[in-house]
Length: 273
Image 1 (cartoon, helix red, strand yellow):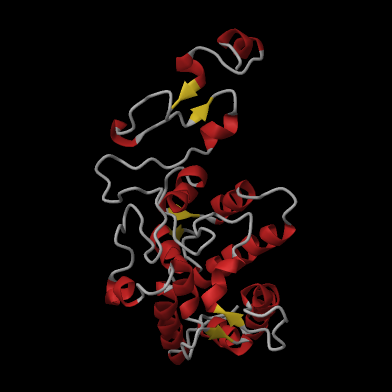
Image 2: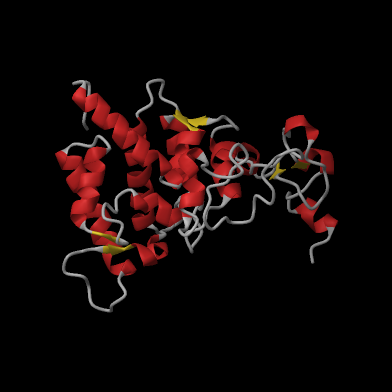
């Protein structure tokens, strides 16, 4: 074990009130102790990108506990309650809920045509919908298969959708498809200074900050997923709202967005990418 003297000599420590800090904590709810320090001044990135700390009065209990079937956050501790979404989908993981919109016949199998139609109905044009189909089914068909043999039709089995988790993402989904409130809140705490939205610049900072070394598939996956989300939401003020992003994670926004796209199409105001 290194003594304090060795730590000082290595330049890795200083007086406690200079090198160890909890940062700006809302309402002073975060009590200082040596076991919950969030940043070290000698490591600047820990000061720039601080994890989220739940206020004492937060309705979200145990944010570190992954939720199997609701996308629970500080603002929405019960997940999506509109139209009884959480209650109607309690038999699915949050990752399965995210994919449900694309499963048009609700048989648990995504055909390439399902993905194409789903993206097209969300406002994407022919070529981007086709590109999404190719990227998603080439990468995710075999991992979700229940057979050692590849599916000649490149179908995706939603029962095994947890196998599609890749590196360099936000870690909001865990490896079993649950929703992790802490990691979701960290997106905004670390990369958006606690704001309730992401701009294109803070989004790029998030993608960069979450990269794992030697993970080109993960880098590409993260870029594709966030770019598709930004193009779908296409905020007029350039700010993707936190609540909209949360609803992308549990898929509840897709049905609403498809209805909005259809309404705009009928009114002649639809713009496709």
